[in-house]
Image 1 (cartoon, one colour):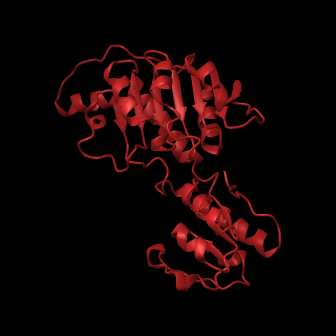
Image 2 (tube, rainbow, N blue to C red):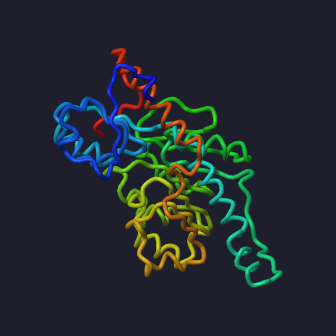
Image 3 (cartoon, rainbow, N blue to C red):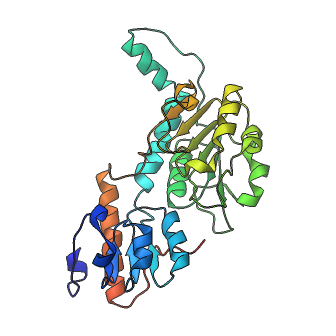
Length: 297
């Protein structure tokens, strides 16, 4: 990292130990310090986050906009999209049930399965991670991949149709699988409410790896208990951590992982974050525009 900006002085400190006085003369922060600390840093020009999401930092920047936010877009696509594929296969092939039966030494089949081949898949959130998932699911034989994004834009090659979130209701009922990779914010909070969950095709599957509050948790439990959805895979929940007494834990058609789709568990994720930060340091010292700048959405 230091080789990317040899003229700069680097200070290393665990983020939990950073106090406001540490930031008085700091121009750049690499890492996810407290958003309020970043907003209060008088000399801060930009912060490089190690996350793809930046919700709390966007809110903090609205109060003090002298600094820019750069996210780690592009770092998590491999890990998260593969996690999504794994969740789907776990549900449609009953792997969790077979693990339980193996532990009890029971040789017994679950006879009904479905296939990704020939299916319709709706990807809600067509950013870096969503596009990576769309590419993988198309490669597995999905007949139609529908991408949903906030605004119109170019259609990726791996996507057959693109629409905006305003058009979500018109395509939701077509999907055999709905994959959610949405960012945070008021625009996406509760976007999958009871009405939309019921609009999903009966017997379809839902995977959410974006933001837990994008799905109305109470409505989800109600719809699941009525058997409308065949399965739901959640790497994010509302709230987090999910309370031990939450009914979602015990629902047979729910697969929960504790917000681990991203993180640094895959070495390549960490390496990509370092490369993104290094490139931005070189851009900054050369007076060039930064990459992955987050707007005040």
